Image (cartoon, rainbow, N blue to C red):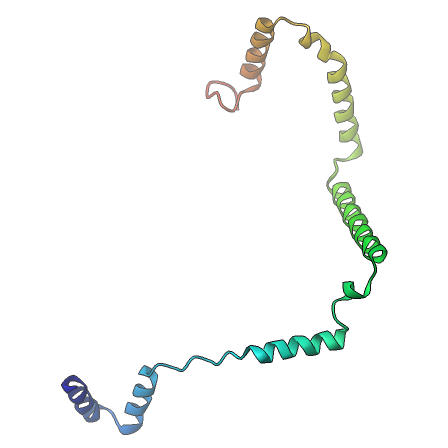
Length: 139
């Protein structure tokens, strides 16, 4: 109480009445805005009346299934188009296909090796090509 009295007395010496009122109004807690949920529900109700409610409510099961199918087909087309945009050029893709065909045709040679020789071959390949986990190999 005394602190407030002294504070007001000092403020009156250094500030005029309008400035003091502004300062006091700035320090007062502002009332919380009223949240009236009836307004938002009224807006939702009006919106539903204007739009006609949820469109799925007016559709039968076959129409909903057709809508879902169409959406899935469109999504699949988008994925194919994205893949086509990011695909390698035809020459590179042909080389990749050729390399994969050779790999498939020669895979039986490595599969027929005894496990010990297969491990040695894998070790040599990793050393030659540079194993990311091995700091001694090429990077």
